[in-house]
Length: 283
Length: 267
Ligand SMILES: Nc1ncnc2c1ncn2[C@@H]1O[C@H](COP(=O)(O)OP(=O)(O)OP(=O)(O)O)[C@@H](O)[C@H]1O
Ligand SMILES: [Mg+2]
Image (tube, rainbow over all chains, first blue to last red):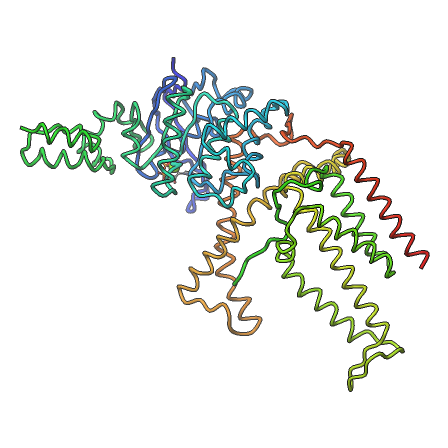
């Protein structure tokens, strides 16, 4: 079953044109089509301004399509009464950890979502505790988020989403402002949630190595989904990706350069281990 | 520049004061501050000071930490004391140092003001050190709730206060960064007259404002994404409970306040 269906969705932001003083609309999403299956781990790639964040906001009803149809957990966000249900099921973790934490105590921040869902007070506490445990932050329940590391703050943000018991979590460049350790913390958590708790994960990222962890990669360009498939088949299309101003994982690029030089090596290598294997068996 | 402020910060630990209902603590500290401002009698102040000392002890907050948070206000107290002692005229001269005369009345007023200010600061610090910002805003929301009918947005006010407190450390960090960035570009922030200094603040405040707006925008989106709809059908994880200990604390507090007020009439 598809948890998210985006059919021919168009979306533009309104702005006022300086010359004519008329209200105009950007063409940010242009009849985009994509489906995300329940339980999938999908990475979305695309250069700056290609419309990834806009797409993410359509997926959790922060923005409504101008045209076309979005069906999220089977509900249409154009119907006002569905919005609440969509948002509680599709959570979102944003880029800047500082701008998504509301309370001055970790556990109170995690409780913010459930409180908005009108959950009875005695049922919120177990949700908060298990969400914090799930992201490995149970020892920081009473800490002030301002003094946590970036990776820890993002894990608190994830716990805040988890406490609403969502079916799907969208990470909109949630690792972009973190150091390598913080990135790993957040990614490991995302993978664990996908594998153990069967939560659908949508990972928007600029880091190609992160995208190789996904079941499927979708490339967005200029408001349209232009490529889609398993990481191996996407990243082996190096020239196509470069044309969309995207990188490929370094190791894939190395494999590509080697094969250009005439080595008989597969260009769909994604990890160092695979590369080592390929080179050892070379011949 | 040093932006270290501890005043208004919660000190998480376990103590009788920490466990009290924040509504009781808020009402008690406010009424205590008002009483201290109204009395003018040595005995009253002695009782108040003893009460505050007992409360500090009961709060489990290290005294050192408390005093550190008050450092900036200490200057203000010294200033008030000095102004009062030199500028208040009076007939009963105690010291005569050339043109400077210190009268008994002046000394009296200066001590009074100092005692008032110190007790007020201790009382309010105790409140904020032993109650988390959320508890405080919950209490304020509770007291404002009756005014909702006449259009006071009590929930919104409480939410604004929570967010303000949440962003103080973040914005201080940011301010620090901007100051250093501007200094690296050659901005001169520390010399010149008042006007020049004020003007030098513009390149610091403008980026700070702009980034605050951006933050506010992102925060609003994040709150909406977490199903925030104002106070429509909102519940609270931590319910405020008025228990037996709150009742006892309230009774003790009222007794002490009565003593203070009586001391003021008797002596
Ligand atoms: N609130 C807004 N008002 C007007 N235009 C906007 C707004 N938000 C985004 N845009 C524009 O829409 C386009 C797509 O933006 P979007 O944020 O979806 O891109 P993105 O793929 O997430 O980029 P990035 O990788 O930088 O995050 C950009 O050209 C951007 O300038
Ligand atoms: Mg984006």
